[in-house]
Length: 208
Image (tube, rainbow, N blue to C red; front, top):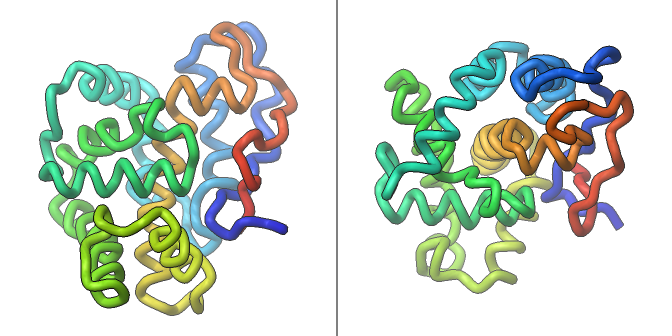
């Protein structure tokens, strides 16, 4: 049975990516990310993570900054931990890939509008947790978190909670698959990028 929390598998990559650097591989990967990781309703360039993925140099700089940072620079401690937990639930392996601190670095240089949109979507998970269980997201049991994520991912497309879920998921997906962990999952070996990507290796698959 498919898991609605997981992401649709990326099905194609650039045709001529052998012998390229990680930066070139990221550029080649953009076409797949644009079609496989963002919301079907999103237009190219509409979601902020898409603009970041068009600049592999900026991605690498943000990743280095995230690895060296002693704490979040934009999110507060509660927001950063909530994002970390959400990212791991949506894309297993996100914690090891440093998705949350990486996104914190990207958000620090985002526009005020994009920052507010992200915080609004992240905060929606706390609001849903408090409404349903009377406590914040981080205080929920894993089964309670999973139930709310399923609710968000299967709600009507026009619902606010579904929109917030999709917005955060797009950020997480772009961050994970532009990390070394994510790129290796897609077939990048450090020197080459496989012309055919492997099947999803995450538990439960990546299904909408």
